[in-house]
Image (tube, rainbow, N blue to C red):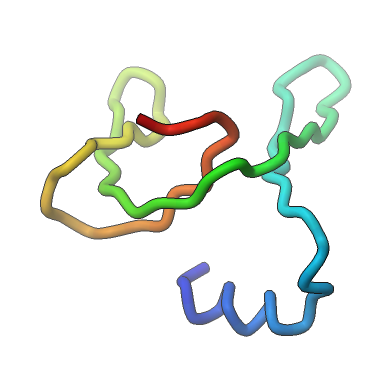
Length: 74
């Protein structure tokens, strides 16, 4: 999903609705869990070969992405 697609979707939503980030818990029951988003910022991602996920790289040039955080930033 890109920013333009997200903006178009958000135009259809209730402006007072809170935003949460949902993800698979990884537990035995494969439950989906969620946390409320507390901040949004831009950043750069780099693949992490150990975990198979992405690592956030602060203050670096690259492919900019929008980061939705569940805890306060710096």
